[in-house]
Length: 309
Length: 283
Image (cartoon, rainbow over all chains, first blue to last red; front, side, top):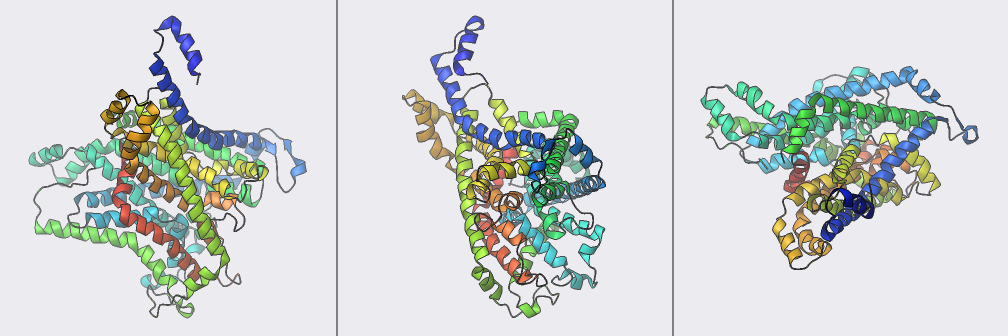
């Protein structure tokens, strides 16, 4: 970003000098956005650069004197470790399954909100409860419900299953919690997407004899595509950094450990800033990769979404 | 907002199906909450009876947690930290959103896309550096140590929501004020700010919910009652012995911190929905 004065002088040669008013407007624009921009840069950009720097060092806070630059060795250690690949797999499993379920369920919920005759306010308020509730609290509720000693689920299903002692049942409960908590957010974004579907078009299709299913798949979903993609992108990136509910329910036992838990354990529990920062940086790059894949795959639709305001 | 559904005539069967749908949604959303309430009211000897409702409810668990200094501190920390983070984030976002919507200046696209990038940023990527920096700056285990990251990670949401709301404000009033001789800043303070209040309020609610909810930063950047917030306190809660896992107390504490959220949701549901959707669709 250049300052107002240098831009002003540089502009003289090529185009008419900016009016006093335009220049003061620019200055005010920069002044008003500066605090937010500076805070965001200082608290995210600087630490991520610092994380890259830390990731190149052998740096364990329990042995602070043994600190030295080791190049990319931490990355080799992380990527060469089976735990990392196991955690990446479980993160992806949780992300993909929960986002797919949320999309389908969210669509149904959005449709009910859209169509509900009586009690639209009740539906909306109830759905906001899972959205607003603390994730740790939601995770405890589900954990207690499935726990063989405190829970009611085993009584209901007439079994004595120990849900958190097996891998697939642990995944099941973790994903169910994630889905319960975040589907309402998905549903609200999709509900907003219904505004992109003109009522007339749907009615015309009905008159032309299109079945309800055809109207949904041939008209409504294609028209809502931009809203669906935005919701998917946000939820995918959000699910990918899942931490709270896994921490509360299994702490990563039964192979449910996710990348965020791995990063937290390495950095905060084991105080290994070098290795932990390598995990952090890898995670950061993976998020960029996911976002880039979305933009590359659906860029045109996202741009269209932005242009429609 | 497209909350006005189709106006086509409905048959009784249709009405029945949608009414059923409504009931299913309400049950879906509320069962885990009702379960927590029920669990928190169970007397100690019925905690493990495997029933959804046990009967003979007692307030014992609530008395226990309010006697626990750890919980009281956590509650105060949570409220204080979330409120301060909310005010700071919304004020900064208000300035930025006003500039983005109302002023022409180079770099404004960059502010918006930068904010979007931060909304996607994985917090775990910076807890290590923040942990180390905060220890050096004496911000570890302080309110400020949590307020700063909360403010940062909610700025994108606040900026996008506020920009969407600010676009709906009638431009002419602002222009009129400037024609009448008001400086851009006066126009902002005296004309736009009061009109923008509903949007500001909405983004404040969303920011508050984020700060109130966070666990990762609270678990990483605090270590004692000085700054530990409720989610971290509940997650690290242990009973008198390690074999006595305090399910009842955790349930009671969970209910206490869920009540403000439910009240907020009931009162401001329209605004929250408008805020969440405006940022996503119009942003």
